[in-house]
Length: 183
Image 1 (tube, rainbow, N blue to C red):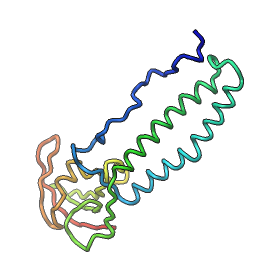
Image 2 (cartoon, helix red, strand yellow):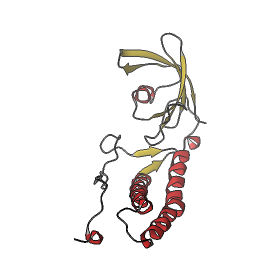
Image 3 (cartoon, rainbow, N blue to C red):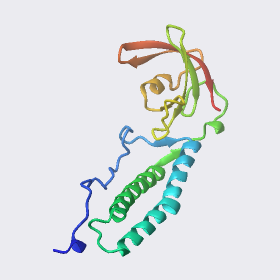
Image 4 (cartoon, one colour):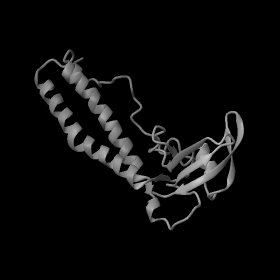
């Protein structure tokens, strides 16, 4: 049989994405900050307007060169195209189901909600600062934690000065909320 009529596969047949957003509790909304939404939208636009057309051009050129079975440009290009298409579908679904919450538009409060930057101290007086963001915006190097993480769940709805209990692998730990900001 001619290879022209066979399905090419890299062995990765998980193109279909689940209907539920992975990492979120069932039925929960996909909250995002405006900055996180913009970053994801920018990545989507770059993939659709720049990267994908460039790869399509390379694949077209490589296909025109003849034998595709041993053509590295063609094979790699097709694989890269599948990766780009998968990422485009993922980003499109995430952005479509997201709800943007702008913490800057919140009335001034010292209560912890989504988008808050919270400084807290543990029993050893070690202070840490975290920003509560969406599941797609987590970056521990910047101190960004998901709103469904254990630390965020412990802090949510508490006020500056409150002492709350946080579950850790070592057991429950009491932490004090030192400062709440919405910057």
